[in-house]
Length: 165
Image (cartoon, rainbow, N blue to C red; front, side, top):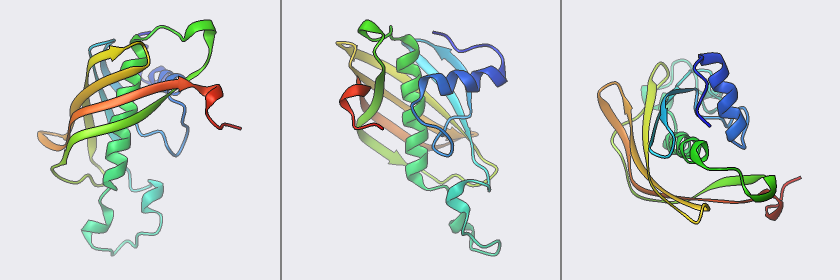
């Protein structure tokens, strides 16, 4: 299922594949996609992010750094988009949810601040039995690497098995 070609419908495509909604959607745009191989996405960091709600205007610059866990989450959502864009639907049309199981050899190399655009490049290494994916990649702001992932393991499980209302 390739992403549509127009910017405003790409966001709808993102929402079709991800099981989260605002404010937890951490991918704003798909720049390029080769299903089953690689995806490049963008996350725009805004001063209006919920994580900055209590930061005073005169707070030190460090207070405005995007929490690194949100960079990791954005990378993980990009990985889910890559994997699920190339995978056939689950047997019987059952709804399956992607879950980040493990990240290894992860390193943070810098921070992101309001006004930055984080560009994630994620590669799909392999998929086992249609339920487990192995990925890797990096996140950059301009020519500066801010996050690298040597290995990410993701799984997908039937939604009916998870405690969902």
